[in-house]
Structure formats: C-alpha cells, structure tokens
Length: 248
Image 1 (cartoon, helix red, strand yellow):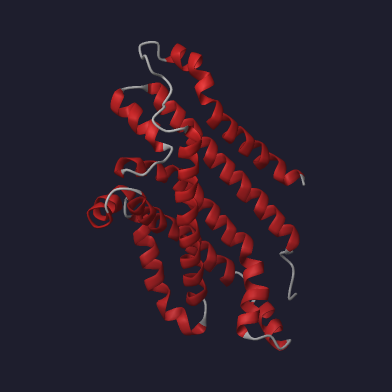
Image 2 (cartoon, rainbow, N blue to C red):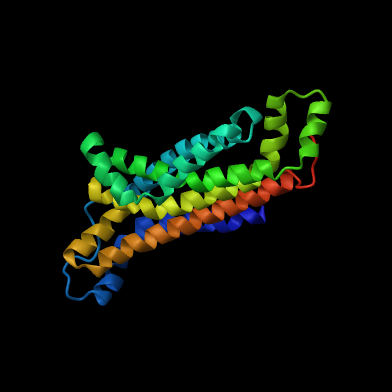
C-alpha cells in the first residue's frame, strides 16, 4: 500500500547511509580539513544502529506493557482508586532527568546497557499511559453496554471492543514515547552502552564536528523513520477499525 512507501524508503536510506558513511569521507574532509580522521571507525555505524534499535525496542516493549496494563487497571471500577498513584509514578519517570537516572543506576547496575534501559523505560511511560487512559475513557459507554448486552464478558469487551477502538490513540502515545527515546538513548554512550551517541560523544570530546554530524544525522533519520512507521501503522489501524464502529 502507498501508506507504507515512505517508511520503506526511509528504512532503505537509513541502512544505506549507515553502510556508505565511509564513502562520504571526502565530504567530511572538506567540512573538517584540520582533522586527519573524519569518519568514526571504532564501531561500524550499522552495529551502532542495531544496538540503538535494540535498546529503544526493549524499553518500548516493557514500557508499553506496563503503561497499557496500568491504564487498563485504572479504568476499571475496582482500580480507579489507583489512578492517582499510577499517574504519579509515570509522571516521576517523565520529569526525572535521564542523566540523573543513569547516575543513580550505574552504581547498582554497572556500566553498559542496563542503566540506559532503566532510564528509557521510566522516561517513556507517561505518554503511553496518558494516551491509554484517554483512549479507553473516550469510548462511548453505550458501546460497552452493548457488548455486555450481547453476552460478552468484561474481558471480552476489553479485548474485542475497548482496545481496538482505543488502539489508534494508544499507538500515538507509543509513537511519541519511541521518538523521544530514540534521541534519549544516545546518552547511553556516556555509561558504556553502544549507541549512535558514540560518534557524538567522541566528537564532542575530541572537537571533531564530523563525528558529531555523523551520529546526529543517523539519530535524526532513525527518529523520522520510526515516526513514519507509526504514522503508517495508525492509518492502517484506522482503516481496519472504524471510529464509528460499535461492537464487532
């Protein structure tokens, strides 16, 4: 479908640029003539991209499960008393600076991927939780009553009615969370994680603008690719689940 063409092209561009970055050495030499080395070569850009994606993917999966589960619990009659607590926990994760989370996590978890995973999970909770609450609470109560009237159990109403209708709103929250965390994951390089932040950090330390640009371009392109993928997914979801649907 045409809706998937832009993200497909962005994926090709991202992978192609990751592989072809060394071929752009003359361009970076022109930009930074005072540096002998202008292409970051401690790790391949493709490896850094894969590791960056792994960190963002794992944190997004864990954060989505936790936030959606929290949103579902808070919208049930038996769980509404927990709504303030759930919201506060998610808000703390969003407002607490990721750098501070890393500073606290490193002494406990050591250097590497674990501290940045904790920071990304906490930082990504709030957008998903807010959208889960907004999506489920925005459903017309008559739709739920219709489902119950047809003999569905509360669990069936949740799975077959509420989540499909709230799905696009929840996806928008995941989209925001993932896009933010793609940029945030770059700071993981300061605690030993291998990410696209490596050339950025190395460039800042050594005064090498070419390194900084290489990392920044790939991080920005990755964020655009992820955003485009989620946009295509949201449009596909909208076509399959009509906003005016009542009960399947």
